[in-house]
Length: 278
Image 1 (cartoon, rainbow, N blue to C red):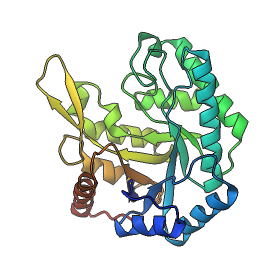
Image 2 (cartoon, rainbow, N blue to C red; image 1 turned 135 degrees about the vertical axis):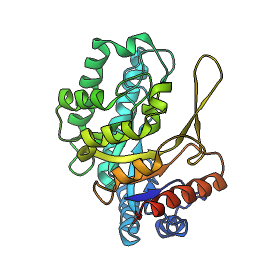
Image 3 (cartoon, rainbow, N blue to C red; image 1 turned 180 degrees about the vertical axis):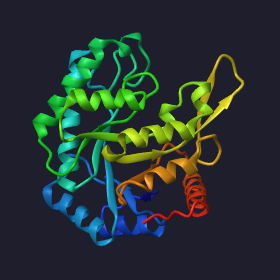
């Protein structure tokens, strides 16, 4: 397994970009270029990553391809196609998005998100994206969310079966699977269930943490790794059983020191469990 995260410097030079990650002890990186990058630039970053033994984990395609606004939906689908194509060009392990929402917020809750019609729309949309691009070495994935599919291991497995495309794989963000107090106290079991059912399909992971407060009615907050209740020993142990290049990517932190502290915590848990990052 590999630990990665953002770097707090602008690196137009591929070798400098790769070196910045290695200085932080990272073995994985977010994609450094946009879809409009020319082939020479994409190839240069891919070469620098390979020479530095750095895996490009994912290309984010954050948008709402199931929006009720037809123009926004079409634009989002094209964005996802462009970014999946970039992931394939640069050799990223996956392109990742959420499935979207039928509500007013692109990533927000809505009653319609849980209907059979929305499930079928997600299936047809993902098929459209994959079939248009026909990736040969990267994969399209959906990040689990609390209020839109996929939201459990079984729900993700149902999507994998329904979409029925070799280029559709799994993304794993265990914090996003914790959406109730009961699940909050069973994070290890939920992690083991997801990896047990979907481990062979996991292309990339996100590393966060979660905290439950006594604020009414229920308040679950995202916090820095090490400040919450996520069973990181279970998380790392399960990921270590998978493809050794599986990335665990830090995200959503405000400052460089927060990333340093998060990485220190995760490496400490790994060491205590007798595990190591590439």
